[in-house]
Structures are given as structure tokens and as C-alpha cells.
Length: 121
Image (cartoon, rainbow, N blue to C red):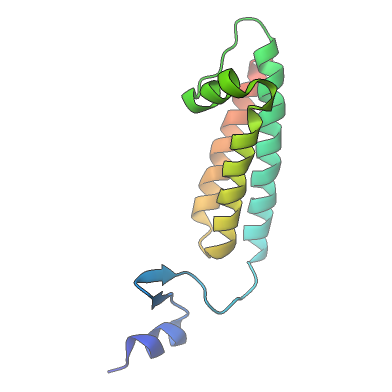
């Protein structure tokens, strides 16, 4: 029978440190697909801000997301700052996890969002 520490290190699993799960303590570089998805995610965030601004300039369009509508109401032209801050936090999290599905889901979601904005133009 092997200990949890030796099993985890032998199988590349996460370690338990101070009661929290550490995703990858070895400091291995992020896989290339994760980098590509992260870059695409960031590009889609910028595309979302730009297409939202253009779509909202067309009469009859409105913001569907209540949080972004709140930011637009209270921050005016700087409404995108909290959005980019949240996207930056999400990008930082992606750098620390090794699974591809969370960022792939986020990319898929924002492809739909940007496509929806483009159809409103």
C-alpha cells in the first residue's frame, strides 16, 4: 500500500496543502492547447466589448446581461472595466488549472455571445 503523497506524485495528481487542493504544484508549463484557448478567450472578450458597443448603438437593441446593464448604467462608457477584470481573473485561474474543458466551455459560450452581437448589427 502506498501513501497518498507518493501515489499523487507518481500519477501527477493534485496535492492537498493546508486543506485546499493545489492543481499543479510542479510548475509545469501550460499545454499548447490551453494557451491557444486562453488567447482565444481573451480575444473574444475584446470582441464582445467592441460588438456590444456597436450593437447597442443600433436602435432597438439592449443589453441582455443584467450585470453588464448595471455596469453600463452606473459606469457609462467605462462599463467594460469590470468585465475585463473578471475575464482577467478567469484567465489567471486557467493558468493554474490543467483541465481544458472549463476554458473550452467559456470560449464556446463567448463565440455564441459575439455571434449574437454580430447578428444584431
